[in-house]
Image (cartoon, rainbow, N blue to C red):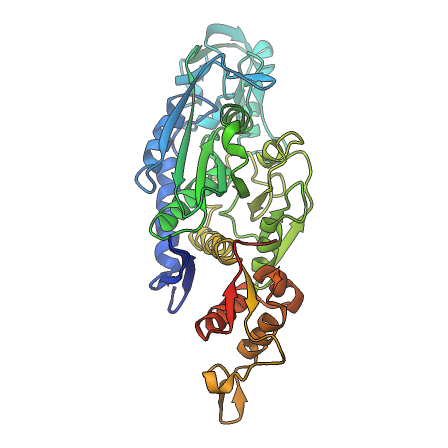
Length: 455
């Protein structure tokens, strides 16, 4: 669906406000592009290290000019160390007739991620101790990992498990676990200032679409859109393996941490559920307030969650010694939908329009961050006459009440101490409406900026 007239307001490098239209915003086109990206990434076997991550990041480079960073195994990163690199070529279980009863080539979820190499024969009793299934959803294959404790295993459907008969089985895991590198993707878009907005997405899950191919794709498309605009903030995008990736980046880039003024972790943004936002540890940071305002006025259902020290990489960015204002932007949260971490998190679960909607909301959030300024009313003694300035519209006795209400609120609270976000919250109006009113009032000579954004 194409929507005419949707516009994003940014700041150019001289501080002047300019309008860049998404001309027009085409939800169908954006959704198709995002779904194509997810479909292309879906077959690749990813992990926290290895060639699958590199292949995935190179595919994302078609959307955004990210750089692949390599950190050697064994590198000390705070209380952790970068693990050995894992790669896998094949894995299977054969019965005594030589038939593959479990085959990695059919689904990369069949292997416990980070399984060490195995080539041996064993009976069913021994094999069962290395098999994982989901009895309550017997057609689905679970996703399991063994990152930090060497071992091996296979994930199977409950039906597959029940079909195994007594006898000897041949087990093959053709993998390597050896010194190598942790790979992550990074892209920095320079704005008028060095103050940064961080956008982070984990890139370590194998064939799981909502968690988190949707986040990887939406982040790349968001970077694509922002790269075409003049920006006040600089934007740092990270595509990183979960947990160890954010720990590694923070440990190696502490000198840049103070630049990060706002941030979001993107995850599970492709399903048909309503939006969910998990606040930063600070709880009332500017990013928390902006997201709440955008969701409140979006016309759809949404949930706001307080910070908890578990979940995705927001828990690293919000650890007490870092304490960045970083929240987590999702649709249905991790663990709250039945397909989570199973083979059912496939291409049928993610919806093109859902991913397009997530991208659209994120662009609105970035716009609000860009536009949040404090202004000073240059005519503060009583109301200025808006009519003679062409700002008071009335046709046939019907006035544009929302626009005029926004102007009144903006004039009254533009005292240098309140930001546009403050005014939007006080008036219960959408930030975009208040920002548009401020633009008109500034153009009419009634307002002047008093510096950077204020929260």
